[in-house]
Amino acid sequence: MWGKRQMRPALHALAMVLFGLFLGCGSNAAPTRPMAQAPGYFRYPVGDFVVTALNDGMLNPSLSGLQGVSASRIRAVAARAFYPDAKKGPISINAYIVDTGEHRILVDSGTAKCFGPIPSVGFQPANLRAAGYAPEDIDIILITHLHGDHFCSLATDDGKRAYPNATVWVAQEELAYWLDPKIAAAQPANQQQPFQQAREVMGLYQAAGALRILKPGEAILPGVTARATHGHTPGHTSYLFTSKGQSLLVWGDIVVFPDIQLAYPQATVNSDVDTKQAAATRRALLTELAASGGALAGAHLPFPGIGHIRKDGGGYAWVPVLYRPLVP
Image (cartoon, rainbow, N blue to C red):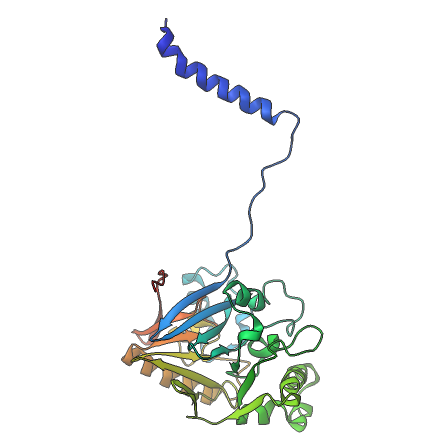
């Protein structure tokens, strides 16, 4: 037999169980399960500059558009990377704010509705606000190239400039290609929409006197330099940010499928306008970054898309930066 002191914990536990059952009587509702992700932004310092990565979401395009690498090698990479579907490659869509203290620069802008009503993309505007910025704060926008997932969020759903105080900078070769009606008309009917989207969105800023043409090697601002990385598109441009001896290269689509194109730099995608030049540009940049150890930010690298490149056998590997608090 238990003594009174020994029975007290058991009686207390029984009482709590009965009380819980009493509270639950008459209610069949399941507890709420939180499903929302944390806001998609990430800070990274470059000297006196503060870079904020903004996630626009994810796409899951078919791997069938890859060329220059065998299907067996693609399947092996997909298995090694644990792709849910071996025929599709999940990719992030990232944009970047570079706050110099004097200027707030946005590099690329996200997808908006240029690819249709896809629920997994279009989060860049909300994440920009979550990161503490308003569209009106952005005064310079640097576009890597004119594919929809890199510029479409520059326009609102009702056809206005989403960034009313910003000047948009695009390479001359890029504008000459995508805004040329003759080039657009020469495309198959199912490939003309991207040209129309570029004309419409760039036209908004051009009409407002807020479209600037940049040239390769041009210093846009102190510590901000445009670098020609042509191939994926005729005027594809990367941007080098430098402050106090630190640097960050921001590129667009040097790689679209990171796992595969880092392992096999010769692999090209069907959205490359010039596949030979795209592969040559990729090899040169990867070789350079692996040798220098320089920091890199990429539009389709796993969010936040900031890290380093290292040599790995006959290819390269991605080394992401670690999350860390920023201490003033």
